[in-house]
Image 1 (cartoon, rainbow, N blue to C red):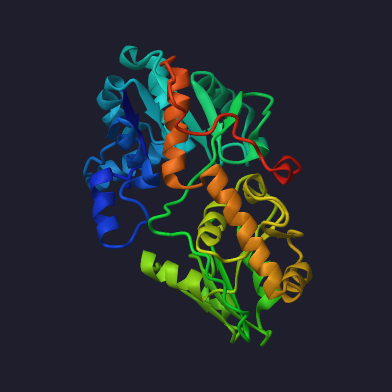
Image 2 (cartoon, rainbow, N blue to C red):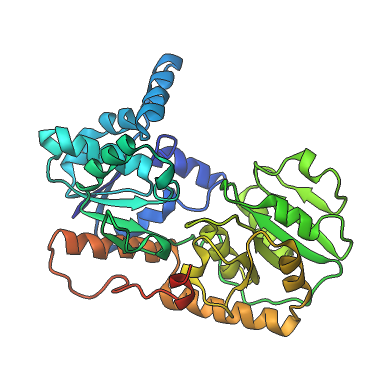
Length: 371
């Protein structure tokens, strides 16, 4: 079977492979979709067409106007038409494909796995006209998939949970557990707009019981200037990411209330054997139960700080063991995610399914249903 993987401009598979060889990205191709080739699938990836400054401006103009990259999808329309099914990862990709499916005879009726990340987080803030336009496109998706249980049972679109996965080649499983350092080593990462750096700094900044590192473009020098125990790392390589995870006593996922955020960092930390402390919001509770991740109240620096101070070495060990057991059981690797795309594609194409290659019903931890 043949799948066309339509990814955003800047995720050209060949260029991404070069970045992987240079140690700058975690997988050989974006999101580890290459693992599907080992299951006998023929994959084609969207290709970035070199742009003049004017062409780049025009493409970005239409992104702002429509909310998705129609120009990039148009350039890749022939490859999409030649495939049995189209795989995507974000709404900026699949909305453009669905637009073409609505108007191009060569793509009409094409099976599309429409993977949503942020579209519904800000749904109520969109105008009535924009929502009607988006619903017109969403109705053409073969399956609307999500990584967070918070998006299940939407009133306007049928959805299916398709868990995310991270590269266990770049972030290998580790069972090494070292005693707490003094000061306690705190690590937080993430560029999502929902990352709550204010609460993170209020919890640990200026407190000599902690040594903290933040990795984010949104964490500025001005924000950390008052705190001598907080440092920023910019654009780390994959090896530096691994060193940071090995350095940390805790990985913190501070978040403002949201429906989706925090999943990637939590999965990487668990795989690397670091206990995770997360705000009880976003996507993390879909993947881990209380007792596997230490959940705290969002926007509460005292609760976040106390959770770290009151967590013993034995509790840290238990958190990691239980979280890693779920990681292995549910296969939260990028290879596991590729298998889930395969199985769903088989269902959508009504291709006879032999030996299962992925999850069936994708059970959700109970904590994920309550968010």
